[in-house]
Length: 111
Length: 115
Image 1 (tube, chains in turn orange, cyan):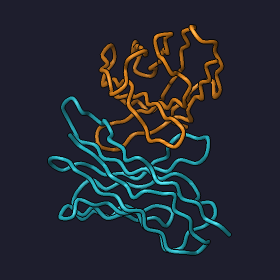
Image 2 (tube, each protein chain N blue to C red):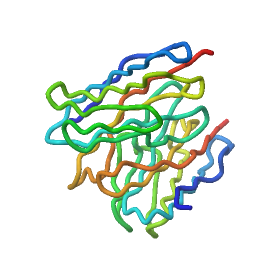
Image 3 (cartoon, chains in turn purple, orange):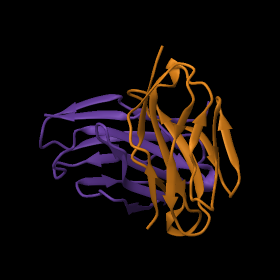
Image 4 (cartoon, rainbow over the protein chains, first blue to last red):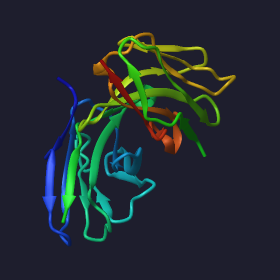
């Protein structure tokens, strides 16, 4: 079955540590996205990539970094510079105007 | 820039009631419009979409019609079930250029359906 996988589902880290969230897709989509969702709020775009080896900042990129070395993979690193990293992180991919398809999300808790 | 505005929730209904969640948008050109649904603790699922004016998207008993004259894409269902309880997001995308596939979301509407 085609789809998007995110791992792990729950992630716990200590403050000051960098952490990398995984996102893999086998839909053959060119574009991939990372969103952050906080309780009771909508989605905010962190980074997106339209093609391998290229990516753009979204609305809240500070404290985050990404890479796009393969079409199928778009990992997100939450760095220690991110002041409030505890959130639900969603990865998505898309092909043109067909809409985005989302992974199940990773819930990150930093204490 | 583009924006999407949804009716504020939460919306609470009894089973078999009629559902409307309002969505209006501001955008240049001819965006594609979407409704997504998010169940507790999960990612978003594409519920339905419409890519041009007067198109009607439908899925699982839900419907929405792309109204360019009123810049609206209201979500409706004739008879809701308890299992429809979720958060619903309206969204749009512009094709091509630097906004390739990039979605603009509304703030989401929480729907709770009681037996």
